[in-house]
Image 1 (cartoon, rainbow, N blue to C red):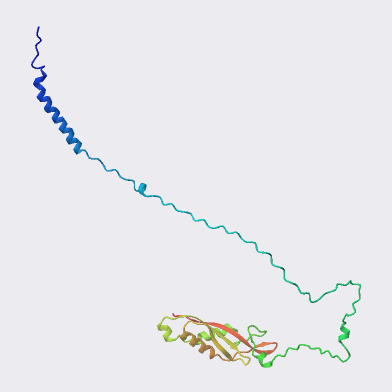
Image 2 (cartoon, rainbow, N blue to C red):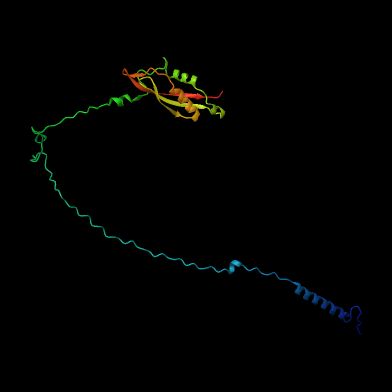
Length: 227
């Protein structure tokens, strides 16, 4: 009995189709293989650097050489002292009475300070037993007298200059005023005006120390203030 094959089950009819399908798949795989890109491998930079071998220099070991001790300096003994007991009598003992004879004259001096009279008169006192007076009053009365006679300089007014000028002066034994000086300045125009008025002072009653007229130093303040 002969077996019959179906035309649908006969593979011979589809041989050409499978061959073409295999060629298509093969070509596709080849194209994919050619299109496949490989990433470059990054080389490690640090791996290529070779470590340099640094040779350590070894310092030579120095040994401190011991120096021989210096010989002590020679001591020259010039004088030899002999220690004696307190009970031994010393024949070479020198007494003060042996140095002083009848022909020896000892002069005794006493210090008597000599004070020059002119130098004593030139002494300037700050405080004395009887202070100088001005027209029956103290230095404050004289300060008020100066204030009444001071004229404000025109140049100082125009420039708006004001302040306190400190003036020093000496009342002489005859009552006159001398050595007028500026102790603290503000402006030359103000200083000159204050000095001018103080120098024009009338005589004072002089100060006295132990009943004698002496020189006495004073200082006042002249206030210049714009109204």
